[in-house]
Length: 349
Ligand code: 13P
Ligand code: SF4
View (cartoon, rainbow, N blue to C red):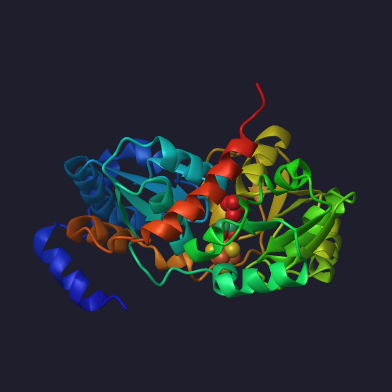
C-alpha cells in the first residue's frame, strides 16, 4: 500500500505543488476542456500537478493512456490518449514512447505490457484492481473448458494475464458481439462477466453462450426498477447503459454500448438530457464537449478507478514505479488472445 503522507511530503520538497491561481489561469487550453465540471478553485489545486506531470512526461519520453473513467483533471489535464478498453489496447500497440503510464486499472496496465514487452509500463497504484478480474483465475477457465468440452473461451479484457493466456481470444464491451459472431463454434464460453455474456447472447441468439458468474461492482448495482422510476421522475431523459449492467437494465435503456459507444451515441444524438448508467466520471469527461446536453445522475463510482490521482501519477513518473511485469511465457500466450481480438475488431477493408 502506498504511504501517501510520506509521498506527499517528498513530492512537496521536489516540486512546487501549492495551489496556484496564476499558473491555473495561464493553462486555459487544459481548463477549457473541464470548466463545466471542475471549479476554478479546484483547478488552482490541480494545475501545479498537471504542469509537473506534463514536464516530466517529456523528460522521460512517457505517454499517458487514460481510461474514460479517470477523473477530469487526469483525463483532460495529463492524458495523451483517452478511450475505452479496446482503444487503449490498440493505442498501446502504436505508441513510440519508452514509458507508458496507465491511468486506469491493473488489467489495463498488464494488457499494455503484454503488447509492449520491451517498454516500461507504470501503474500509479497497484491496488487499482477490478471485481471482474478478481472473479476468475486460469483454474476457473480450465473448469469451464472441462464442463463444455471443445467450446472456445472468450475472455473479457477485464482479466489477469494468466486468464488471458488460458483463453482463446479476448473481447471488450465494444467488440464482444462482433467476436462471438466471428467464431465458428455453436457453444461459446464467455468469462468472467455474466451480464456482458447475457447481453451479447440476446444479440446473437444463433449461438449458445455459457458464462462465468463474475460481475462489475459498479454496474451490477443498477436495477430495472431504478431505471423505470427514473423515467417516471424525469420523462424524456435519454437513458444510456453500459453492457456490464444486468440485461433487464439494458432492456429498459434507450441505448447500450461501451464507454466509447456511449460517447459516440451522445455526440450523434445530442439529447437534451441524458443519464449515463455507468461510472460517474464518464459524464463529467464528456460534459464540456457537449454543452447542449444536460447530464443527470445517478451514477456509481468505481473505487478502483478512483485510486488513480494526479499525486500518484506524478509519484509514479518521478520514481518510475510500480513497473508492471508479466512472465514471458504467460505474456506470449496472452498476447495471442489479445492480438486475435485486435485483428478481428479491425474494420473490414
Ligand atoms: P469499456 O471502456 O471498454 O467500455 O469498459 C468499461 C469498464 O468497466 C472498464 O473497466
Ligand atoms: Fe472493474 Fe467495474 Fe471498475 Fe470497470 S468499473 S474497473 S469493470 S469494477
